[in-house]
Length: 257
Ligand code: 48F
Image (tube, rainbow, N blue to C red):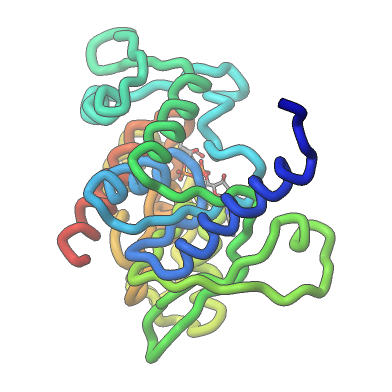
């Protein structure tokens, strides 16, 4: 068979269009493809929910690829090991309570298993705004990351979702957008973004879970965005809290959808 460039092109356009058109209305839309977003997406998709993820960069995985300072190993505490086991990531015990995994294997496995569970992932897309109806977030406003990076004046497109998860990490970008549009109305102690505190691994890991919750009607925070929003410390290169946060936000949302 002689390969035909036009068939190849049509196949890509047709298949991408199918994915795009089927993700206009969702149960949950996740912003950010780091570990917390991926774990959330996996559990929601596995439970049969319609869930989509938008990631600004070409590669999914956020801050997990580089382990700690580009030493590509991650540390995960005992409490989160069941999640890596669920995904089938290879884990090595380091000493009591501490486990390690190859960060490249960990993030590629989280990504692969999430897609296989039914999570729709769109890379190279950035969320620049939200849709709001009567003081509730009801969707996302999207544009190509290349448009954002080049500063082109091109209008975005929009998708609807019953719930949004801000899993944008330290930047907590969706919460920032909401706070800009309706200042002082976040469900934090001051109504504002509390801001991330300095490193304190033990406290940060516990607080990440407590802070994984709804911050504005229709909008949840997970992962590092949860601590940045509610004023928790950063934890550094330990990833159990990120995984547990993804599991928790999925569980909480499954009770509401
Ligand atoms: O930062 P990130 O990995 O988020 P996370 O799941 O995990 C944090 C850890 O990696 C680490 C840590 C724990 O030790 O503190 O930093 O909380 O991934 C966030 C992803 O969101 C994307 C960004 O490119 C990254 O891959 N992102 C951020 N803003 C947007 C976005 C946006 N507006 N639209 C689309 N993607």
